[in-house]
Image 1 (cartoon, rainbow, N blue to C red):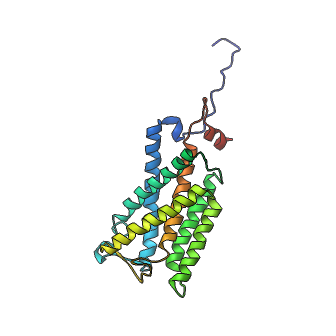
Image 2 (cartoon, one colour; image 1 turned 135 degrees about the vertical axis):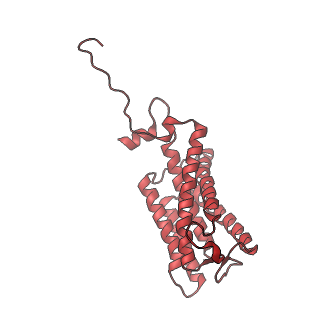
Image 3 (cartoon, rainbow, N blue to C red; image 1 turned 90 degrees about the vertical axis):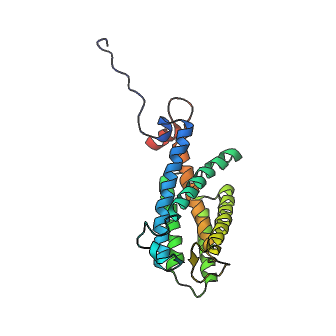
Length: 230
């Protein structure tokens, strides 16, 4: 390098972000893995709360610890979380309605905290009857959607997820895989669809935020990197 010349500064590095180091297919796989483990973690924590309050009952030999209790629940919830978290941004993109409401990680973390609180309330708060509890959780779940989502796509997918998840749960209980104490909606509790709705909205928000961070823009830099590093 000639005397007097100065080295030009390189591009500002603020990663690593998923999009800067992976192809589209690997990007999708990494996001799916992250969503899977988030779902597994939430399932372990929330299922433990339900078992401690005797809302769900499993055979005595499988509740020796948090990891042995209903071993199939965390993988199933993790898989469902990955599908939901990848589906939300995909539907947004195909419908041409990108979700822009409260797109930051602090909002996502608050959404997760509210979802855990709703689930905890279903096991901890005592009401005179299940109808009052169901109406309260329904209001809280819709409030979660209004506070952290407000999209027609999010609401529609949340309702669909609640319906399908409740149907699958009914079939599992009917076949004796496990049971609910004091069921009042066929074989399950009437507030269960509210939990599934809130869970769908929560995982959808996480998936959307991961998609924001990992979506490359045109040019040498990434829009998400520029926004997060400024």
